[in-house]
Length: 453
Image (cartoon, rainbow, N blue to C red; front, side, top):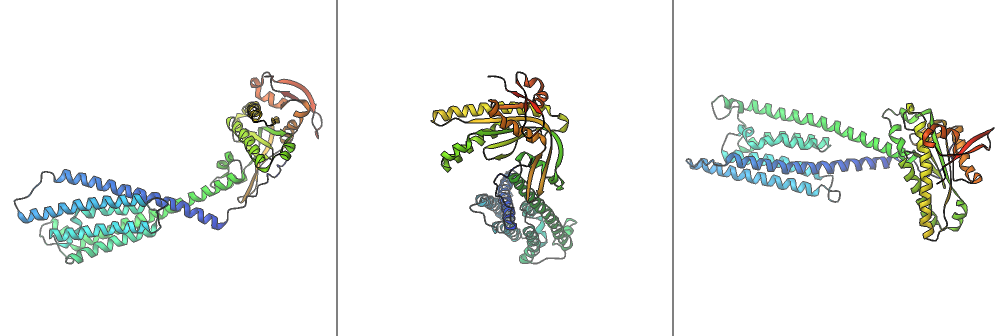
């Protein structure tokens, strides 16, 4: 028996909508990355400030007046650098929120990082009077790997590439502004040979190599993030058309699970409201909406407690499946026990609801519930744009007929002999009603009603 349409008017997500969703995911990632970068800046500044204080405490080279002035200026520069860097980090954290964030802010932030380092290097060279080749001896130069690491957090390959090139060009420009490169350093010792132009050129080349490696890493991360966004969109689309519990199973990365199908022993429960048409005719649209919402909420609550999948709501009726996602080796017994327990739980839910309705002066609700166990075909039909999960077979027909027979037999809940047999000891106390004819089916079926409460 194919399921009737449920009145859904969902349409496939359009390409512009998908692009908008992708941009939203990436924007959220950028905002989070900028916040992380700001926090790391602040922590870096705090760490440098602590280390600086511990390193220079007690050192006072006052025997040389010029050296003392150089040291004092360097100390002042270090303190100003750390403080300013902390403030830049705090500013990044402050603007890393949806209401303030703009796409150009990461570019401004990265530009400030590069300008910050290059300016500090230039001031240090001029303050110390060292040869321009000693630019890499300045402590500030070792912030460069940190700045490159910031770029790797932003998922923005063009920005990472621009930052790398700007640092490399700046490292070449700073010595030029401070007096020009020298083929060899001012000193004559062996260490000075390592601050000649060739070693410094190699250092710049290694910084470029590190930056390019991070550009590749950012590209890979961006592709991974985009792929994750696509998988999230697919799962979201699947949950619009399929039971939410099945979406993870059907959203396989190879797409093959979208054609999920198998034969399986399951338990099926149908529930329907008695006299719903008359109630609907008396109610206003707002009242009917509130009534159906309250009813479906109670069905969902009971289904969740007993591990059922609500295949779909059909007006005032609902079809619940038990054992669809469970391992086939478990057999139908757990599903049968859960279905019988859920049927009784639904009756308690309706009884509690009727108490509230009576207090409000409204008519009570009566339902019919049918439970049956047997083999069905479980599968999906359609394509990725419009999928429907379908359960087909005689088991579905019988469960629906049992629900319809509850009114004639004067009991709100009926279970088939197959369901009772599968449930075993859990069905002890259920009352046998004998064999009853089933409309549209040859022969009868032994039925049971729940224990008298």
